[in-house]
Length: 283
Image 1: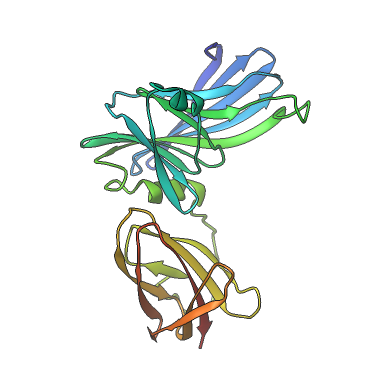
Image 2: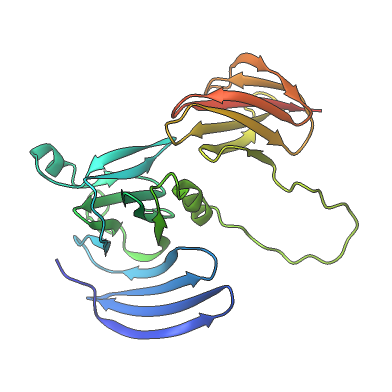
């Protein structure tokens, strides 16, 4: 193992009321790593935006964060849920699972405090003892002899928080990294600004809206959501437009039963880690 500690330059490139940014340029063998660290005034996380020109082969590049947390299990987000894995290699089974595939976040928490490692496109994690690591580049040569070479752009984030990952709403923070809010300047024009700007929202933080799309076989709108805290929950869903008909569907969009709706609202019960799909017809 080598540490990438050949720093060519460090400079402050932003220093404002919203955020500050520090740009670090590193060199490793024939590769260059440009990294910008963003610290925010009102967002309790540190973003690491990377542009890497990678020239190496058979070298695995990881980001590592040693943290002072006592926990024998870590939690990893998977599609429509999350799983726990041990943070030790006491058995051959543990050793064989040295890396865990996860999506937008991995979390290590003790009683009252924790740290989450968020990312926007990297899926190989390993957390052993109190070191959180994320695989950035693999640079294998089979089946593609030039895998992972040339330019890469991605962001990962460190999010320390009070309480566990549920109390600190780690899934919401991970979504804010992966689906950032975009701004656009507009000239004054006619029209009415609606009081609610959301296309659709739910009133429970443990229920995540994952998909909003057009139905495959009609002009209806499909909404797919899931429960992520392992809790039975009663949910109220609000759409931006008045609804004519709501039906619950399976994953193939075959209707199961009709759901009562009032105006632009409808309610339903969801089980722990359950996936729900609804077909909406607008008035």
